[in-house]
Image (cartoon, rainbow over all chains, first blue to last red):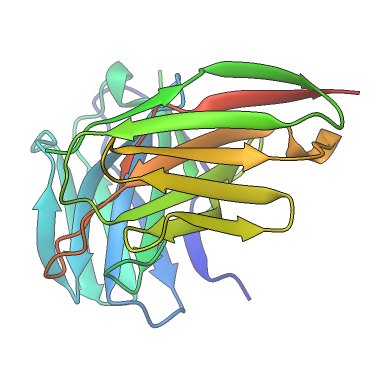
Amino acid sequence: DTAVSQTPKYLVTQMGNDKSIKCEQNLGHDTMYWYKQDSKKFLKIMFSYNNKELIINETVPNRFSPKSPDKAHLNLHINSLELGDSAVYFCASSQGGNYGYTFGSGTRLTVV
Amino acid sequence: GENVEQHPSTLSVQEGDSAVIKCTYSDSASNYFPWYKQELGKRPQLIIDIRSNVGEKKDQRIAVTLNKTAKHFSLHITETQPEDSAVYFCAASYAGFGNEKLTFGTGTRLTIIP
């Protein structure tokens, strides 16, 4: 029973397309995150939501729009995809405070 | 904002020897310091963490030390085994009012030589 699940696992798409990545957690956590891992393996936060409310937006282009229909789900929609968007996107959840994250398995996005 | 530096970027260690990875952080308000292990093609997984009220924590072959004055923390792996080969990330955060976020170091690729 996967704690944080992301779909799809792989996504190959052309420049200019719009795509979505879905994330769901069954841990009962209040806080969810999107992180981007680039080709050099650097993990950088994009967004965080606490109980459906946007808390952190780390200077991410407006083409990226997160949506949290409820505290168990955090989706990421990307408009007008660019080559530089190619990366692995990780969803994560946490019970907040000084507790670690549980990461999803990642979505490898390749823009061609 | 917080900035976390991690060294070395790559580390090769003979099986059975110890490995040490070091991190420094910039924000003196940070109070939570986890370490993650990421195997090739897998998700980062929490292996150990330490909070600012503790100087050292150990879990079997893994230990973490924290020096708040120097804003420095380290991961120690003893009796290394081939399955320890992975990328390791340190991170730091401040537990606020639901706005905490982990800032990660740049990662250390650890290779255990059989």
